[in-house]
Image (cartoon, rainbow, N blue to C red; front, side, top):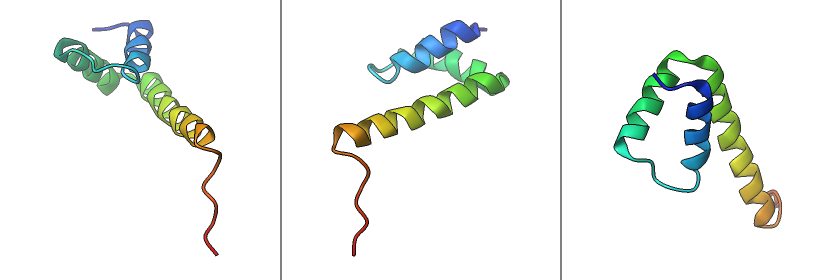
Length: 64
């Protein structure tokens, strides 16, 4: 099983590149058993969404 350090590294790398099948399989196995790493993954997705929104000019404006 992958360590938490390796799992978080792979989650970060997955934002920039496609993971190999063996990396994906090991990560999924780790995430199935590790709640803290699942939480890290959720936080990473939220940060990416916020960063993308900021880069595009901020939050979406409410339509009138």
